[in-house]
Length: 416
Image (cartoon, rainbow, N blue to C red; front, side):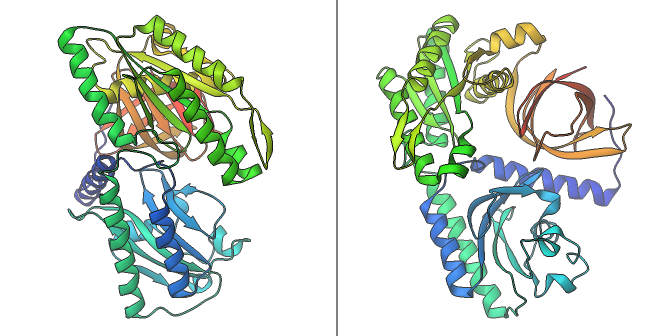
């Protein structure tokens, strides 16, 4: 491992970015489910400014993720490809009246291609502590002016979005599935873990992700996707005991805490729920859909004794299940034995994947990290070699690693 040497301005920029990502991590909003409150803000943007596109976004180390979007087909884009990165870099509003005449954007694919963006106005989504965690944007496909009053209105809408974020911090239940929200799940899980450690009894964690869920939404629409989520959640809850915890971590990812359950029994529970989900096609106006899920299992130990570690390890096992063909259950213990990897904790750090004799690099977000392995998120894993150098910006960390599991946007790596 080697340390990088940065100039003073670069060090300051890295420190700001580290603090920004820490603020984003503390809110625990990335990849959370759709929310009607943000959708209303986006609709207001379109109505007030008479534009084609409205956005409320969050920006991590490698991507811009749309918490709410109206007018664009995707739900995230690489950070380097966004107009909004300029808002984060300069820490103030950015207005582009005609992108085709702006040297920063005139050759951008969203300007020259079918998306045909011409007008852009973006303001920072800023926490009370002054950290910019994302943007609120009004975008149009024709050039237009934008007055100081308009910028002020967009700032007010950003303040409304931040108010909504703060309100969601206290929400306990996901409105669609009636599962615990991610924050509430973690809070209650920590209490159960404390009890397990104090009384020295077993506790296990399961994570599950619905296979090919994006294809369901893209093919049959969000109503079909919502029906799938509700059925999967109901199936899980029906199979659990009264004292078990069930939460929705993200769009199609759920988690379960099983008190007084050891590793072998947890694997059996995971397999039972997996079979129940697979055995029940979901019927609706969209027809009948066969649904499957991939599961990861982790267990409380003297090392893995907090919810972030348990979730990180269960996630790593779950991605291994997807890597092996989906619709199966994998235990962290089996993955650890096969790969020789140690404990890992959930984080949110800026990283860079470096390969091709250091001539090529791809930004990534480090989502979990241990002494000998990590979980990375990328915009696309296509083209990333099986071995590369991982550099974690701002920490002077750099090491060679190899891929042990991957899917479309995730890489599980072991350090060499």
